[in-house]
Length: 308
Image (cartoon, rainbow, N blue to C red; front, side, top):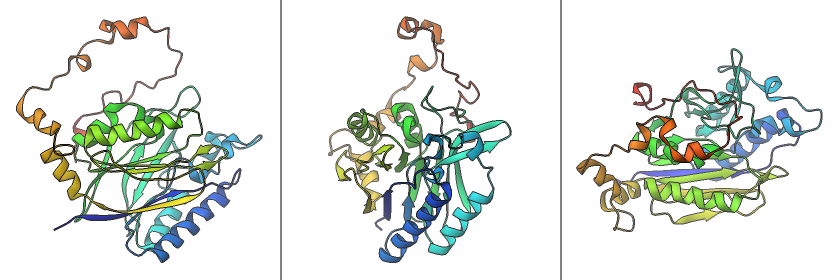
């Protein structure tokens, strides 16, 4: 039986400087999609959408002031929204407070309103981002009767090991909420496609538009074909994805030519760069001293916590 998943990637603009206005807009857009496109199962928003870009407004609140606990008032609003529209919901990301730490976090809500996945961005874009590096490992979850999905946030995409680990854990579709307006957006569209190709999975990259977002969100299939790409204006990308396409591509190879996952079955796959001390790397030794405030906690991420 074909495993179909209707997805909506909401490339929309937050209400600048107004988190409550942005939250209201997220609810309005979600309800509009659910009411007008009945076959959509999952709705995904961009990174940090619900903050209303308040942290970038002169005199606006800092991530520390905007952060909320999980569970908390914001998660209750998301949960109620998922129940109301009876859809899977990934409301972008938000600033999460946990003790003294502030994370850039994303949650996945089932149609029942239940939180089924909780992810903290592993690689903040430092030093521009002040949030802590995520400590919950890689994020995958199952949609009953459909398949396994994975989640990463914005700069995470630049680390191939993140998407590879999600695929290794069985992800057939990777959702990638993003907020980027920088001149490397053209490069990022290629990086998103590469993540889909190398891991032979669907990759959905959803960016904001407006002052702090360059749009060009994408839906990419397991063979690397760009099924849809938005422009630089508000747009809702909708597509009916066949997750059996992932099974076929992984079994037979990209375009029927490169069944790379079978190679892991048939021969040892110990890549020595990941088992040797960092001091042995000529590349790392050639770099200047890092001033980035990396959080070493959670650096060994692929352990028993990550295996469903």
